[in-house]
Amino acid sequence: MIKKKIVHIIPTFELGGVQTGILYSLEKLNNVYDYRVLVIGKIDMEWLDSMPFVSREYIITTGARILAAGWRKGYRILKKLQPDLIISSLWKSVGLSATYRLLHKKVILCGFFHSASSPHLSATFFMKMMSFIQDTSLADSYATQQFLERFYKINNSHIIPYVFTFAPKNGHENFNPSQIRLAYFGRISQRKGVDRSIEFCRLLSQSGVNFIFDIYGDGPMDIYREKIRKFGLINVAQLKEILPLHEVMDKMGQYDFLLQLSNHEGMALAVVEAMNCGLVPIVTPVGEIKRYSRDGINAIWLDEVYDDNLPALVEKVKKVSANPILYHEISANAAGTFINYRKYTTVLIEVIDSYINNNKSRHQLETNQP
Image: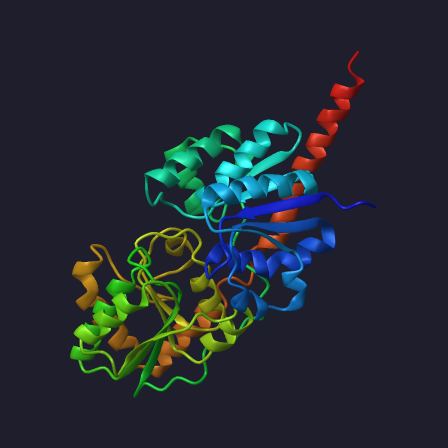
């Protein structure tokens, strides 16, 4: 049986929840489909080369340095691949996916939305364009789905949960209250609340808590290194290199808390991964985080108004870190949060199959009409 051709278009292949989800699902999706990832821009080959070989062979790049050139080269690649269905993630992919859909009416187009907010006008414009051209929308969480209904008036989206098959842990075992270990994994930016996290660490240090805070990611490192120096945190807070995907969860197991004080999120995959490792997440209850976590049960929340409540968050963390029994209880609850959740790959296959089968039936009806 010939496999249906699926192409998932993304602008770049770097650290991020979208790319991580793709890598986690590549092998299983290729058991069912001829599934390829088309990257509009250049790829950090050193980072990609650290991935298992089975992942790399499914990834195609235009090699373009400029977005418009990537769209042109990507269009030629799509014409050769002749996909049955296209998944388009992030606003920079829309120029390519929408153009191809307009010129090839039979291809099914699914816009994949990954956040419960729009970061800027360009994103709003292109994703609004997607909402008019696509056959359906995919949302990484209920929070994102609600945002699509409210902001883009999209009412036919499918939730593709960013939850994967991880081996659940029985709570984090190596907790030492004399020095707590915090970490962040992801893009280093203000939108992700890294500035706020550094300010939180300044207050935590002033309160007398002994801790380390390691930041794994990619971004304007020098700017944040200067913030750390300015706050007198150079002995406790460090910026570290981006990690290969297959090393992330093992590295997470070396820490006690995930510190992620984002302004906006969708599913927040790094939080999901950390909770599966038994880390206690210290988070802002934004996006889907407020649905799958509970303050003092399987997470520690920074309450609104976020910046004003950082001192109160320090007190919450001090209470948990000073009580190993309480810490292990929250850690165990975090580790068991997603056991009964439906998984990304299973749900995505169901949605793809339903649209491919409906499209096939529609084409047969059109062919048989007199």
